[in-house]
Image (tube, rainbow, N blue to C red; front, side, top):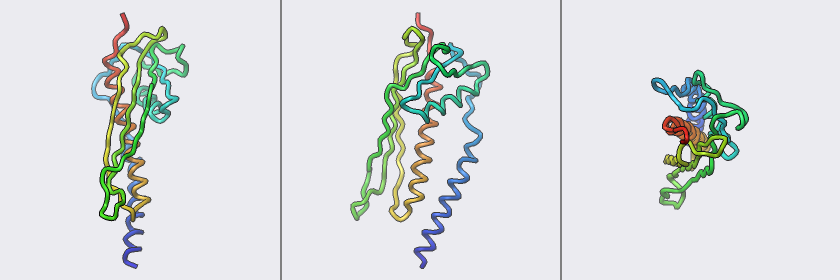
Length: 172
């Protein structure tokens, strides 16, 4: 009976945390200071990473005087995700031979180019890795935790992309 109450309590706690987490992150990401890009409009080709593309649209859409457009012909530059690779790897095992710790890895290769196909910055890659502990007795909590980590990795990738795009230069 005690074990059932502890498991139930942990599920309730995990559910409460999952409900509070979106409220805490609702303020969104705000860039520090003045942001300057050498281009004023962008098309984001998000076919390979729709959630990342959506995060980029939200962040870039908050910059005054900047446009995120729906068609590449209307944009000064296009951000294309060349390759997106998400991986999950077991890092350690329990004494019973079950997975105890995991590593989540996200690798995103991207390219920023104009209508003529000329690069505004060299194609580049972002790699993000996070680890977390796994407990067989708390499956629901683990799934919630893993999704929160994936969402955080997505936001981190988008923020790194924004910083890198500030170094973009018009082709000569």
